[in-house]
Length: 111
Length: 114
Image 1: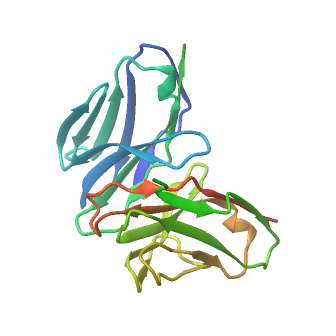
Image 2: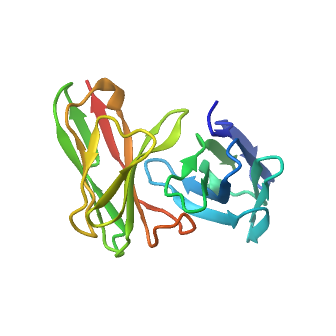
Image 3: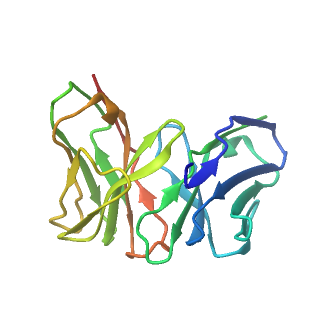
């Protein structure tokens, strides 16, 4: 079993829809949780960052962490065609330089 | 502002050949790392460095060597390429040696080993 599980999709939604992306993990030591966005033929770029449990909102994006369930989510409101990309969850433990990534979910937002 | 620069963008090797993937960053970051990205596997850490002269292994280090002689550069060497090393390789850096800082990625090197 992988340490971080993420449904690879693909996921296709109409413009304006609410998108929910999720990851589960098995390592209870993970404390830092991140979402990266990767456009085709590009390197990933950081989208959201959360420490420990709770919610964080940034514009149309909301990240949630439920450590009791070992489950993290990224919500995208009012999705736009420019949101079409692969979304990768990532997490690591305190004082740990080995960040673990999910496989990535490929999202397409259709106009 | 260049950020993280990787060269070459594409490379085809024959089994047994050696090569070096180059990575340079201009942000004075202490931490640098190499990942490989394969379909369905996500990004997996190969090697990382927390400063010049210091390197350590990640999740999948076998078949790869690294060294860090300067803050700016972190090359990845394949000593004897194998088809299993066909992948997209990403170099990343961040400003502190702790995981709380975001990783800045290059745009990747696409390697095919035949």
